[in-house]
Image 1 (cartoon, rainbow, N blue to C red):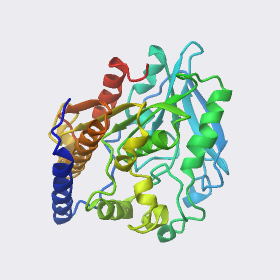
Image 2: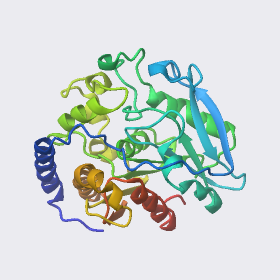
Image 3: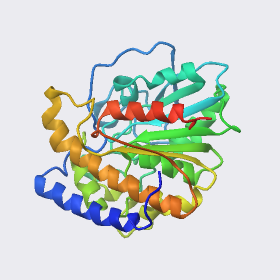
Image 4: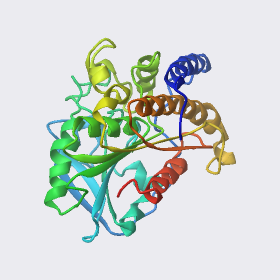
Length: 335
């Protein structure tokens, strides 16, 4: 899909307008990456293992007793003959028992199409990054170190367990706040990843109004509230552009990229019983994700990249993210 050269500027203007609208509607406290939850459907063939947490909080944090101290749970679907592997990151309301991908989607069946599936568990409001400090608003005892966990603990663990990838590198993909995190991990560690996908991701974090939006959204993620200044510092900190996919495009040459978003309009996964959440949460969030995706897409093409793109009807919900993963598979993203 080709985008006009003036799209980044238009994306910035529309982002600012949407932030203002969200503020007026009182929606900034809604969770980015929440989606629609459903009862977990068992997916056969899962292999569960644990990796070191790089000193970040796990089981003792906020009373969660199902985790092992100092460990992160990983659930995976593996076949010895598979030559590709994808790491799937959750959104802002990630749980500590199962990934939202396992609870709400069927993408684990990629394992039957030559792609091993790996889902690290936990990390609500983490952006899957190394935080500067613990979140003092909710008395977090130790700072998140998800950058260390994914790149320095999970990837070596996969290699040790025989998970294969293209040239020894893996694909990484996430939804919403996990989507921009996937792009950032891949750009910063080209030695580990050959492909990155952002589904309804916030791929222009330093756009006008975005930091305020994220700051307010994180006040409503359990265990609430989270202090976003503990993540990358205040808005003027250099760590913000260092973790903004938009600012890292020049480091993505040679990566296979997939970016997708709904348009905020109702589609096949919007059900009558969820119309309230879909209209007042899913629609505004997906409209914001759309402006961010379009702005990133235009900037990437201006710098000579050619990402696979997906634009369709849909709100900020799991069914649409599942469709994006299968679209990526059909179009050769994992090859």
